Length: 338
Ligand SMILES: Cc1cc2nc3c(=O)[nH]c(=O)nc-3n(C[C@H](O)[C@H](O)[C@H](O)COP(=O)(O)OP(=O)(O)OC[C@H]3O[C@@H](n4cnc5c(N)ncnc54)[C@H](O)[C@@H]3O)c2cc1C
Ligand code: SF4
Image 1 (cartoon, rainbow, N blue to C red):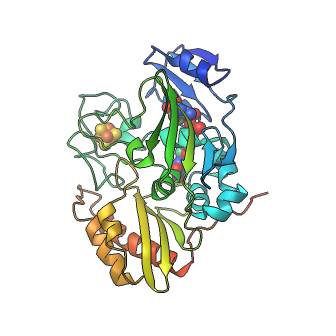
Image 2: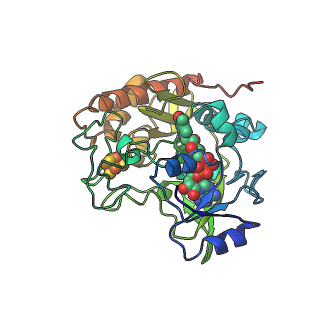
């Protein structure tokens, strides 16, 4: 049994105060990731700060026509929110493609952003893992790496970020709002998660003592031409081998704007402006999508067991963008389960 102190934060300022100066303190929201990690001895916080009572549970329109999502909005509530279903259906689809109904009922927006990798060696405390124990090595590089990254890897870590929700938020150009000892700041979604580099123990650019308060979506939601396509080993309750969140703005057959982000392939949701530029002004055809896929995957690198992911990603991009162009999203599954 490992002892830890449990405290409850009364407001955001109190949460920031309670975590200040203790690098081993942790916030807990839904607890669906942190508590597992504590039970498996991967995380050993000395202080757990319960933030579930903070007033961060609203989904509100912003002055510029976007949407502000409080960090404590549950994944289920967000997926079923009428404005999200109507204006940002790719986000509903992505959330509904993740985990299970029970988990989504507990999981929070902030916790989903900060969930940790599903690399099996990260969870196995008797194997080397630079993310869990910096400097110990990476058991995955020469080990079982079927689910691991093919883009943006380093000699220190080849883990992927496991979230589905974040892939849609990356495609939508969201902004993460945080509060810390130095006050409030906003972080572009693309800059929130990090590549592993030499410091794989750091998943994000959140500074010590900062709390995520909200995620803001800009007005554009690609509601007409979008898809979230998730390729996995079984149809539910499995993390992505490769996923894509795609959004297109079409002018007849031509692409005015195209965006796509991939999940399951890197340490963060993966977007590539050069690949998206390859869509602009082009006809919305499989040939165009294949060219954009080749651009995005030009530096992809496979390891012993995951080289198949490069071809899978190429096919996933072509299929995802084709579905988006036809207005036939793959997992428009945000139907209420009663
Ligand atoms: C069996 C299983 C299957 C799953 N399958 C999927 C899947 O297919 N796709 C998918 O996307 N996810 C999946 N998940 C992961 C799930 O989505 C996450 O566990 C969940 O989103 C985490 O949210 P939470 O509120 O429970 O976080 P917690 O467990 O409470 O916290 C997670 C981390 O975030 C930190 N944190 C939480 N809130 C804040 C905040 N506001 N500010 C700063 N730090 C914060 C905590 O300190 C902790 O480090 C699965 C989980 C399980 C257990
Ligand atoms: S891939 Fe990353 S998380 Fe997995 S064992 Fe290597 S260092 Fe650890």
